[in-house]
Image (cartoon, rainbow, N blue to C red; front, side, top):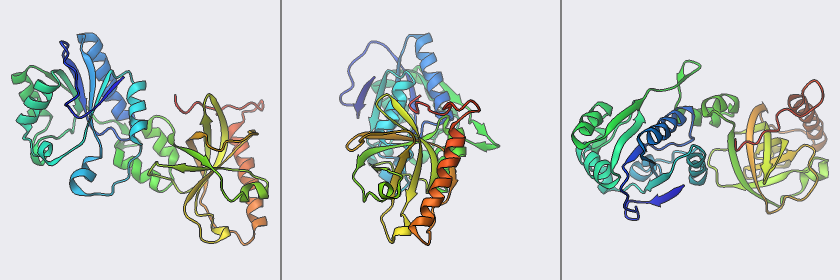
Length: 318
């Protein structure tokens, strides 16, 4: 997959493009429908498949919002790659681009720069200065400029419209099961394993301490799948401040069931399966040990089928 930052480095191509436009944060099931339509159109019409996406998020770049992102840019690009997209253009939003009218965006960016022959967007897509234009306007412009427009209806899950903002709300309260239904896969974070204070090892439950750049860290104790390289292990992950041991900065600790070895310096990916409980303060370390023992028994039950074989050791990378 080819990745370009801005429009200046785009190579000239005789082939027209099928273009999908959006932020695509989280690459949820609605986004995947857009990408599936994009790649199908590209194959059928013999076009280049191209995603036009934005970084940083427009709400940050233009409104100064501190909106947390579901994925890192690298995770988003990996999702595009797995969806079969040929090229991605990452647009650093600036005021000049933001001030383009709808017709100017369609002509200068889609028709002239990207040589769009087909454009795939969500049905609620808005564009142009002040979000003045919608999909009907885009279709009208496409008829003038030589591209077709393919709006994809919203996806509904549990009577709610699938959206990145809904996923953010679910993750903020630790509802990773509902988030996974909307994402179409477990929510994932990844980070490098660094030395901690070795409290878990001293208590009999060694943990991998992750430093991550992922921005949404669901609070609580979770069933997770920890993967690194080609290996994956069921795991129990705590995200929080370890209140039993005083005031601590927020952290991510994962205990890998059945793993023996050294993970320091490795990049580990955690896929969140289900929340077990909220983090809480225990009166003594011994009381914490008893609770972790109960958590581990619950985890083993969840990860074992009736014949005693692991059933949830998933490659969370799909």
